[in-house]
Length: 276
Ligand SMILES: Nc1nc2c(ncn2[C@@H]2O[C@H](COP(=O)(O)OP(=O)(O)OP(=O)(O)O)[C@@H](O)[C@H]2O)c(=O)[nH]1
Ligand SMILES: [Mg+2]
Image (tube, rainbow, N blue to C red; front, side, top):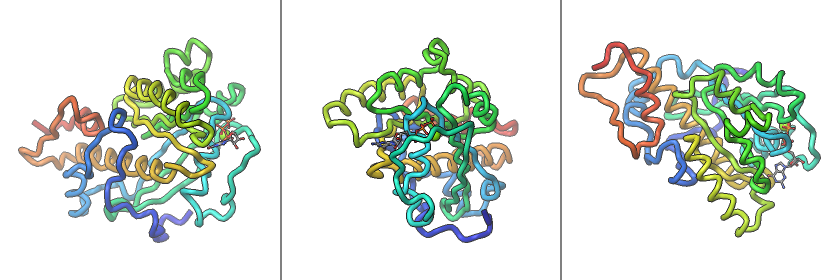
């Protein structure tokens, strides 16, 4: 991939994409953090534009991780080789990754999406790639309650599906962004969906993840979801960069309150040594 190539016009984010459900969102602000907007306007984003942010996708086997990453609704027409939905299940062996480029508030931003295997026998390969993730996408099948239960790190350890516990172990839980994604929404009736969503929202709140429900077959919410991942990962990166470089101005305090769930808090946890 040529990092200097211009970003496709439909990958340019000038506004913050909104969450799906306010009850389970990383934050519910309508706009990017003011410090982030300011930094972008003043070209003070440091290395963010040159770095590649790692996002790992985990979940039970066959929940639809690979289809989600390859879904044509997000990438079409730019990925001619992957413009059809694959109905045949082909297990991922180990890991695979895709690189995607965005432009957020005028700054180039690259995401590396790591697709891991759900099958236990390939997990030891996949787990070696967990380290250094800035976001973890945890996928479950909206039509399979067990796949939701397995997203609970405690439960997953008990039942032998340790992917989330392992992924969290390899990353800083205070800064990694979690997304809980229900897949195959096209297969649920509205009534079934409502029931499943109730449980999923509870699980997402417990794990402090942002909840999404998608269908890779119809494309419902896929594009919105990935744009949200890109935007929130970018925002967290810029805030971390500002903290690191100590650019915070006197009186420019990050406000923390219990409703500000929770990206803004994440940035403030990474304390700069020069700040009040
Ligand atoms: N109806 C429907 N089927 C889907 C959807 N997403 C995936 N599938 C089907 O579910 C099966 C598994 O999809 P994959 O994306 O390969 O699942 P995976 O999670 O990557 O599986 P592993 O690589 O083994 O971990 C395939 O037969 C897909 O066609 C969806 O949104 N709707
Ligand atoms: Mg797969």
